[in-house]
Length: 323
Ligand SMILES: Cc1cc2nc3c(=O)[nH]c(=O)nc-3n(C[C@H](O)[C@H](O)[C@H](O)COP(=O)(O)OP(=O)(O)OC[C@H]3O[C@@H](n4cnc5c(N)ncnc54)[C@H](O)[C@@H]3O)c2cc1C
Image (cartoon, rainbow, N blue to C red):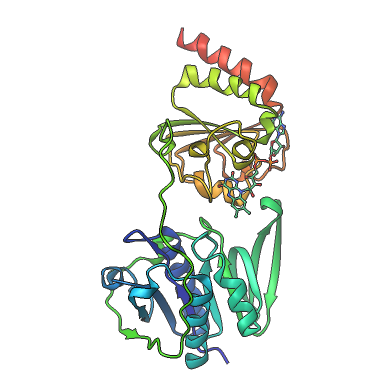
């Protein structure tokens, strides 16, 4: 029996997050194929402003309380469990983001339902649900068959079109009673990252270096390229973790989301957590010596080779061209 699909709405700082519309779009598609209702569950305080954007669902379930302003994963999991129990939900769709990453495993253990992380695709085949997961930093795709069509699916940001989740339709809203739900809070306040010397989210050109740059001194090769193209140097997480560049230069899930006109990915493998932060760049150029590096799946232009050899030549050629 399948009584419906839940999408947990993500919102931060008064705005609905892009991943919400991706989840609603794919949720709508699966709900229509299975002929079941789609519920948008929105948790927090002052939620009315968000409701007009969620009309692709059949019903919006509002869970509102002052104490839910920064609801913890364990509290949200408890709320969703109550909704599943009362409505007989079979599929829960969550965002694979820092905001809700903790909810899935807790809910999975509470409900004894499978939790499938890093979902890139969901399709229905011969009456089963097939989930494609992107594993090992984006290098392996695995298909998992859910024969009873029950599970908790965590969506990799950027996997589904956000436009499919947008509509101006007005749909019924139902308030969920919080009595009987334990609210456990441990988040105290939201801290904005410190502003760095450069705001990489505002740069038109980013020369981004990854572990393939090998050491801090070699970042000079990227800076030479930047001296010709302009822009700023950014990086993947290992470069930041090594202390070669400040945290304000990190691109990705736990760094900045950037959308420059030109993004150079130098020695960056293209793990999902990095791609999440740069996939919407207008033009992506990747240099990597591994022809199977996942970064080539998102790059518009790719050069397969040793960046330490290619960069000086590229910089010289561009200098020559510029006269
Ligand atoms: C919760 C969480 C949050 C995360 N947040 C982020 C985040 O915000 N940003 C982020 O970047 N990562 C993040 N990560 C880490 C992420 O999973 C990857 O580990 C990381 O992106 C890999 O960085 P990389 O591509 O530089 O290194 P690697 O994956 O080690 O790749 C190095 C690449 O360089 C290539 N290479 C090596 N030498 C050369 C050469 N001489 N010439 C050309 N190519 C060469 C290799 O072929 C390889 O593809 C996060 C992980 C988790 C679990």
